[in-house]
Image (cartoon, rainbow, N blue to C red):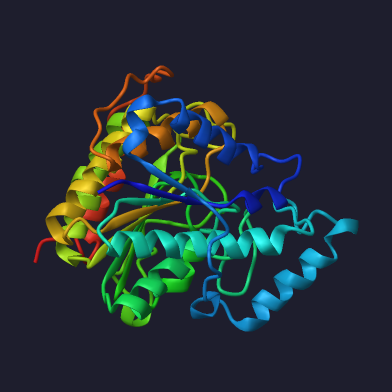
Length: 343
């Protein structure tokens, strides 16, 4: 089955002189278009049907985003990190819609990737922050449950920043497993290893705060020893990948040293888990990534992985790092997290 990529030209309505700008999607699509072996990939570029965001966000939040966007011509900065312009509300709604489209394609048997922006994993149910307005992957997870009757969804967040919004939205939900590997310490300052969920959701949140400058070996070890065993214990009906590529060593906003190959190694482990546990049901939703060349290379590589194409040479190369930087947090989680500790 071809890999389907969902995007919309209307994402350009949300752009500013800022690390999160419209050129990010342009670079990704250019890298894919330049690869003649990606001809099996179907790139679907259109205005996607509006998503039902109210499964995650109250109607008052959408009303607020619409009002702020309409008034934004005089005050483009929503906060110190996040800008808003008149086209933001439309772009953000279509980004959430693209994430739902990726779930639809996944359920039809196609590998799928929502190449959308603005990103979403910092948005809580009621707060826009960290470049994010609606939580795209959370909306996609609720769409999978409401539309297709899936019950147990795993969200694996590979962005270098902790997805505090996704964590907050699902903290008390035992049917959504949220896993985040992220640089520590780094914005937004949440995602400690002890943060495992609340109330009925205790154990359904797995945070893996990796020390600054963690590289390929540390990340891969964390995924082999922590993420994969947690997925095996949880047994999801589908896996949604919050695909942020700002843990790459070239990213100006990150603090880690993953290479393109390192990213693809951990994505391959997630793909293998999806094949083994949930009939290959997995899809990806774009989050961060602010080195344009690293973002394009990582995303292109992930599309090839989803399409079962051989890996190409990592032209950006890698940076040396301590392979044992993650040992302490891995050991602690294996001994203390409910999904990992021995019975």
